[in-house]
Length: 250
Image (cartoon, rainbow, N blue to C red; front, side, top):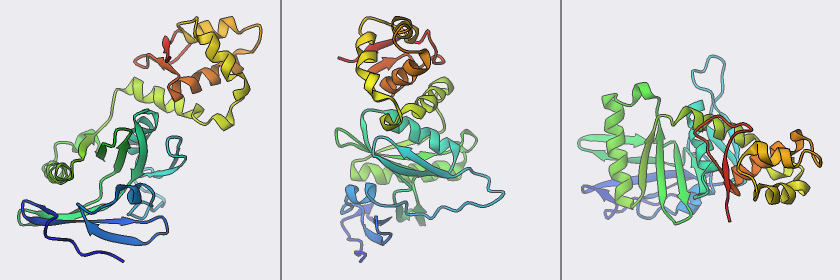
């Protein structure tokens, strides 16, 4: 059952309520201050996803290695931000379309569903809105951003608006995501590859040392998984390849 918003949960004296969907699909409404973040991250997107011919945005589901389950996305730009979150070792929970915020902004009643909610290892919560660069200066969008930022700050959450990152970095992470699942790799050779990396500084260097033991097509996926998992920290400012440099995390 939903719970009525309390007078204590206000933005400039006005009530802010939150609606989210539990794992069983049931909708719950509560106060902003009473919201249990774990119920949101363990639940379903509050908004239904629809696929149809001619849709302007590309929607789908992405398997996030960080949380071991699917995360929905409503655009390729949103998927890119999810990929970066999944790659970030400091992020421990990812929820898409996590809840609907409802509250007064002056004389206007606003209802807004943020795109993402991220929970970090240190307990920080970040709410993310993803918008195309062409819309970032739209007065309606900036007004919504300002209100959402104020609401998040009241709860002690960080708020981020994202319209894209460094193209090379994003594409490198997108490529690395193809090697994020160890159950799809020949992991029995992972210790050998990691041990070899201790004395090398490039991907090509690892492959050259192991050339007599394993073919490149066997070594490269394991190296890329080690970069994804954070065991190796690579320079992702340039396209990935044999010359990519890295450091071994001790």
